[in-house]
Image (cartoon, rainbow, N blue to C red):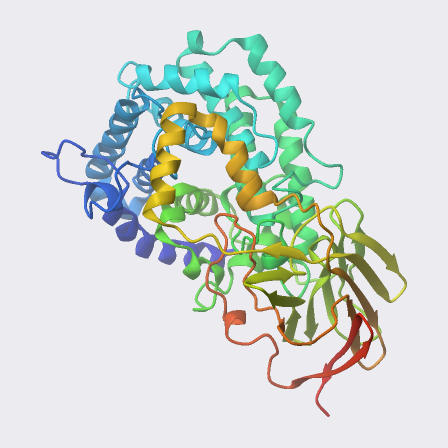
Length: 533
């Protein structure tokens, strides 16, 4: 753990100036404390994205680190200013905007309110100074429930729990209990929470951070138990040679935040597991290909930044002993609820990770050398049809030494942002408020496909000397068919960070062999991955 702590400390020292650059630091500026640099400085946005005010909480957490002792007062003043700016914006019509004016979105109210409420609890700002904003936030959080991206719902629940402590008259205890009970019921028995149709390790770790906030506010052991179930789920993926899920997540999230995991350090039952996970995730943070280096500054202001600073405090307080050197566990597990197959000890000698509900995208690890197959893109008449798409329509059959996935390719056309579209969006938002959010999500994220035009099958066979993929696509010509790159067409934040797989999907020392056969309206593609002789 010493290496993990030192790595996060160094990263945190380099991260703090990047977060400070995002905030308006001029005490004489009318928007002192605003974190949307594109709004207060560059003037290229006509509203302040209020979710970025979480950056104030990151500064508050950073102020508690010994190396920032000389800056403590300055950081806390900025953190307080971020709360006051937040409260001022919360009172305006259509408050809590993230992507467009008058949005009234759930994520911006949930995460920003949680950050401000925690700073009230820590004495950075008084409840009276931000009471007006807390009042508006509590009302919105009590009226709405986010069931498709549950990390947001857990963050909103955490905000309500802390608001009840710092301003008790704003949150009804009976209503809050009902929300807590309902939210906990959304955790799958496998340990994950729903994120746009399935699990996502990155957002599950964010959920864990919030579950600990609720436990601290309520002392209700159910929330610690929920975090423990999430820890167990993450542990299985992290123990694979691929060390995580990334594009095999429902929301394509490459990062995992450390605070909720670090909270289990020192726990009699989970200490070793938490150490193992943290070591696997952060012991190589000096590697420039580490996932944290590809996170953009927006998300460092969201929750990644303060999770790192909070984790450092915990790591410094616990024993620095490393995990016992044990043999890596052999994993052969199929998650029925998620459609994931994980096998670290196949007869072909490689570790296999398959996301069945993503059209059978597969990652293969041959003793440290990787190859990844993201399926196919078929382009026709200005439209793309993709097999790499998370959905419940995939039929999955897991058998000995293999897995089969059957479904259909999803149509996609890129949505180009234009002034006219934004003008229409602003008009609708001004008049209809948050009622348009569901329509936007259906169009950009969920894509309810009524026409199953191009059936697709993938059969993955784990053979002694290779891994074989047999794909069957109902198209009459290979023209327009391309292997899919790492990027997913599905619009999900905070995905699409850079990864070295963007350059190459097959490492040196491995080979890919392919053959095509056409039988009337069915194209069959056989792909073999193996080590070079």
